[in-house]
Image 1 (cartoon, one colour):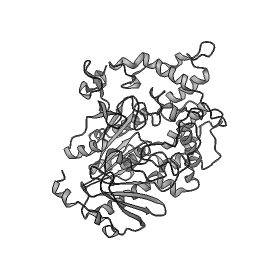
Image 2 (cartoon, one colour):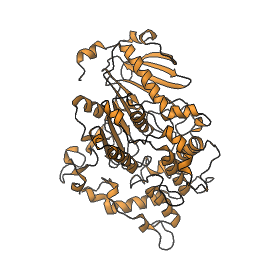
Image 3 (tube, helix red, strand yellow):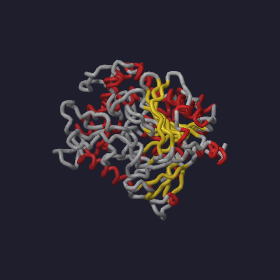
Image 4 (cartoon, one colour):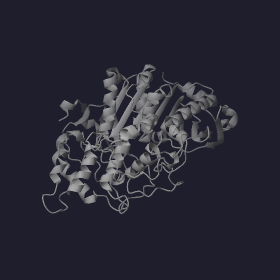
Length: 512
């Protein structure tokens, strides 16, 4: 159903409507403030608390388009976050909401979960659900109209929240966009981050420099690019599908004395943890590893996996749209150092003194079973969501150094293995050269809120979308298509390599 201009006009609310009488009383919900704002579009901002400590902020535009979208969080959240605003949701007329998921703190700090099961359950799934139900009820009361469609968009933790909603609360949203989803917290991310921390910082008392530093990162990246960069017909530092690059990192092992042109045994072992993924002492895999990509860029390995207090940029600059200024940032050499220790200390073992030193991972899968039931969004059964017409877009960057691309592909393939008909309602977009949620050598901005909305408006599933490079003013500066997996973008061989019109989406066996 396409919303008419008459309905939009009918739902136009002026400043005078921004008052408590325009809302409704809801059980276990306290409205703490109502304020009229004009930036970036005229709207009524409603702040409130659900239960003891689930904070939310609902933005109700004067010119409502009849639709609702919830924006997800990032990291361990800890403040009210609404990443749908990055897609211009408010300017487009969406009523939109975000939540802190039931606790306050820096998004790299998980100590809030210590001995607090309610907060863990809120973070895992309950806060997003309760916020969605509450916000939709308030929206309907404010506009005195039903909501035509409800969406969710999020990336990283927000992407995991999106998958969780589809699996556990299939009636909350009609369409969901899940970017770079953190969906397997334990044993997945817990094992991956902790084993990389062991390899990069074998002595947790010395966090100045990682075993792998800038010199080694440059060596690795330049070596595989020399072999594989032009496989897609363009020399641009971007691998169309890094899994197709068969470079063997072991070829960089020093034959004699250590130099800048080779890796020591310790360095090679650390690198193999990153690429091969974590294993227990018997060699059994615990999660996916990373593909080639992001070794030298600021938002890749240096930020997430290696770093070092000697080199690390301010991790307080966490993610766009997330408040970090109100909270003291933990002193960590990398993002994974903060996340790995946080998950293990406060989610899995509930022990602030836990350390990865000498930890062998053999009991992690069993030890994390209980918390996994609360945190993990790994269920491939989306039948309830799809039965009521639900549509899901998943996307992630191939150069993401936080959420391994192969893990996201693995979940998508699990969904299709469970029910091949799910391909009608689920789309995966793998974005070459793109880092965690945004940035990198590849074009990283796609307005996925528009994509999911167009899917419903037209009834046609997206086969490709246009991704843009953005300049320093956040304006488009070149484009390429991103294709519904497993297709990839093939260059026509003669057009502008920064123009989407020079590419077409082809099946894997035709991409070379």
